[in-house]
Image (cartoon, rainbow, N blue to C red; front, side, top):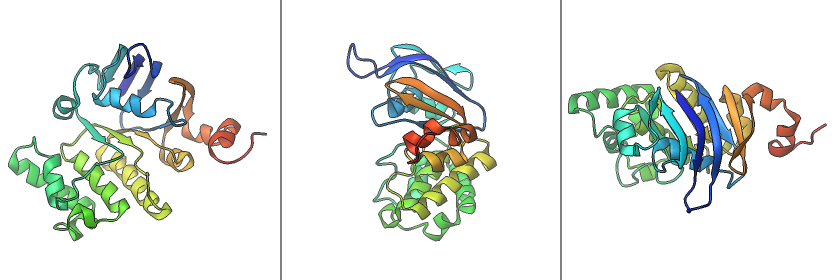
Length: 239
């Protein structure tokens, strides 16, 4: 579970990118953050992950205040998994080696068991077990990045633009993998995504940011049917 309470944050003194964001993501829920470029979506993920500390307000993961805990500790101690948009796998390492790095804090026997579990869940990984990540397609790389983040069995998973640069076919495969993660592992998932319609179809709820504030929020299906969303994101006109 993720809870944000009146979070204010930014990178430059005196300039706030996030201007009092409050939201919750319930256990085993998929929630999408939408909004135009520069609205604060990735900054919000960085605050939750621990790359950036809020100037005020609080960030809680599973009931624990994690506002000032850095990401390496959140991964080890707070059940957090994070998949950035770029540089999310090691190109020169094999699939097996990438998974090993994802489980570097696990005891060796537990790490081997977890690698075997993920290989069984995602057969494409087993098929190319010894292939370097550089030889994978864009969709395969994203699935590898997802499974690498799953190595420590996180309870919360943050995804930054998981569909970036993917073909429509690969996008569907990656979104299917995200649904499987939620269904099989009961992981709470918060993702930033530009493909609004596709993201809403697999989400329970969504939050729309604008200029560092929450502009809209609600159940994913309600937002899909909202005329304002159609005009802003789906290429239609509001009635």
